[in-house]
Image 1: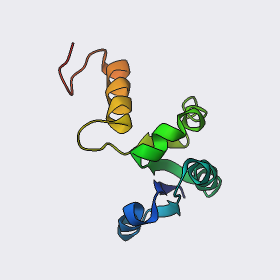
Image 2: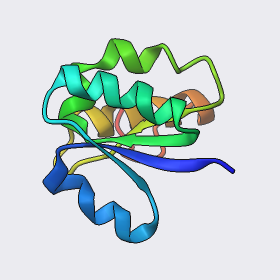
Image 3: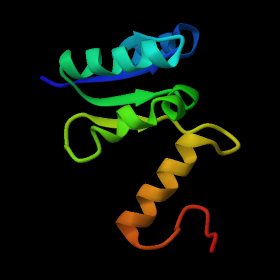
Image 4: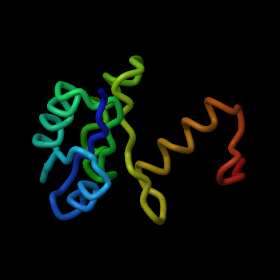
Length: 104
């Protein structure tokens, strides 16, 4: 059975354990890259990653873009940032228009 994982700083991701997610602690880009691989190897079909680390390992995340599993998803953050930018781009590709932010 597939799992859901979360990669990020320990204090930011421990709360996801309460929801049954597998947590992979990473304090910097190097650790995040290693934990992303570990989550994939542990059978995570969906891997969420905190936005600041996602921006730092964007090239590693792109490696998984063409395969259905795992889906690597940056967590959106308030006020924009890497996660929101990625979400906006994915919606525009899927729908053909910006239906979330209604910007031209």
